[in-house]
Image (cartoon, rainbow, N blue to C red; front, top):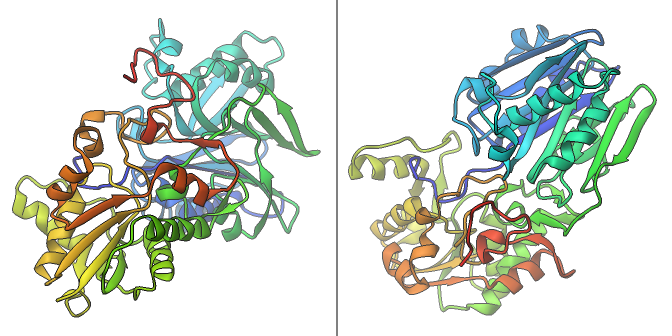
Length: 463
């Protein structure tokens, strides 16, 4: 992986608000800031004042793109926002979202979290100059449907187009007067409905984005559901029957903020339970349990609590680091890791360590991190992973479509352990991981660990 990161790059984050009592651009900025972890390549906001839609988007982080001047230039009480990591389409300004289209008298904007698996089929025969991603294809299909509808009804266009889509999607959509949310029939990616104290309505990928704007969680958008928010409130349309429920299990392992809830389950508590399960499954004699910051912290706390081994910090993470940069030499790559992490020598030297990591995907950064701990004097390193081996590509919103780069697809556990320079390595077994997330069986996508894809991938064999 070019940036040297072990974890999969996240799905995108979407946000929408309709509140006549509050400036929508400012609320959307706060919501996107809370969702920044889901995508750091680009961000954008589309705002309506009731008569027209204005869009501002750019490459970079939410806080570097938007300031008070740019937000003041987006007046209106309804908005949608998007923060992106590219899974389909290049990382370029032209693919930043929201995307927008004119169709007759209708102008709409759209933000997408997820990834479609039938984009090639949907785009077949099209020669649109502005199609660069699956989200652009959806916008083009909606524009076609609107152009063919004498009434120009965006809701009718959505309910006609959405059943044609295959894969993962949570959409926020708006025209000049209505805010719309939609979720695929499998519910791969989360989408929540919230209510502001002022009476306005909010849509967001995760509950912390509702918290930050002072909205309470009303419910999750159901799989196969469209919600339309207008002057009369919230209206629900079931555009497709719910299919096999398949919320991404990696939302709990790695993607979602620990202070959020998904499917009624607290993410932080689920990660602690994974750590406890891992301690029972794969105990080890050690002096200290430490996490690889940050998403592994709850799991390491759970491992320490269950095992009775002291919890401690062995690494400090630079809070201002984003994606580690592309480096042409090994020395510069090692330096990039040292920018991201630094060992606390006094806590590590001479100790037998249980190092807890949420997942191992490519292992490039993790291998360098193990060297950091060795250089700091660690006597033993016992690596414990809170998820099952990540062996299969994700086509539903994470950037792991090249299976050859997934270390567990080409190496055994023993080989990975040797490659990383650990004294032992254990993954949490899949059934234990799922039970730690929820005692209720089923309901989660585990394709990246099992090769069982809820929506078939065109042209792919899982043998």
